[in-house]
Image (spheres, rainbow, N blue to C red):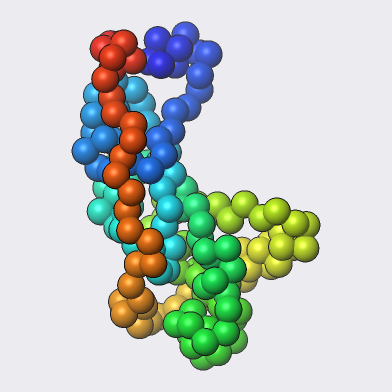
Length: 160
């Protein structure tokens, strides 16, 4: 991969569902442009990775940012903050991500154009920053971190 990057055949390389140690191992071989892990208001198992990416100025792509609409439903923590701020729960969930780290890029991946339009309105309204980040501390992860299935070994890891 490094040779392909040096030859200009690959402009940027990213990693998915990796921990800090895996990022560090990859950085010894390639320039890591982005990390994409599941991350949202309720699933924060990758907090350490977000902090690492923030310190190293590596883009962090948060996939599943509104949990397929679960964080946008009435009654949750995002709904409570939304009612107080005049935003929608989805706007609150996306704004929280953007406030969390300036290297954050939420990746909602809508399947329908109607959903895309709703998400676009959420992203344009994310300047409604919450001044209550501690309010979200009680929200716990809904999905446990899966063990990594990709390791740096073999010919790719030996490129220099």
